[in-house]
View 1 (cartoon, rainbow, N blue to C red):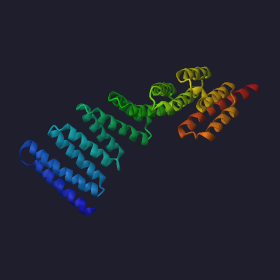
View 2: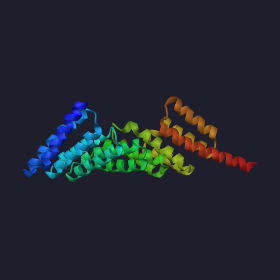
View 3: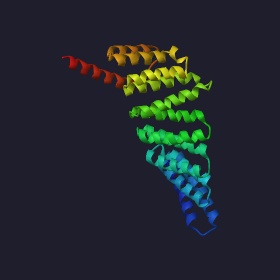
Length: 290
């Protein structure tokens, strides 16, 4: 390990020397770049990720001096992936440099990929606002390149986090839109009931019984097979429980569905919000009666 670090330092020193020497402009940066690349590889073998990241940034700068934006973008991405193991902030900063350069040279699919990666890092950090912003940008880029599946994956993340942040209407619109698109695609058709269930749960979180009833009618028009699904039955039972302000009925409906199809953490969290609202209403009514 220490042997690789020593080698890396030697290559790095030679690169600095090359940059500070007299010589043909482009050749000087090209030679220094080769040495930086060798240094970075040594640091990677030694698992010295910060040193590898730092050298990749220097390599990117050499490429920029030679106006090789594609190679510079790749070097920034390599720097980011080295820092990914030790420093999320540095990782994000260099991924942004990579995606901006790829945008400049029209490599939009690469930009989309790195945009999505930044979003995932913010997601890991639980910074949902920033995650939404980058998933949104990635979705637009994927859509522009007609990579619909990836665009929809990003949109689902936006809907998921929007609902977590209580931006229910935004989430509803996204889930309904994805459901609408999926109906025309034989591969995606099977996922429609799931998207409509998610939209319906967000409708429940808004607490407007009329809106929930209208939504269920709309979903049946959108997909006539939906009314025969367990997802529809769950939403209809929950809507009735909310209308009747019946916590026990609400709980039973959730339990019945969960016993057959395990509810994920996101759905459970949102349904718990609805249940707590229902409980508060029930207690309020009890207080009014005493």
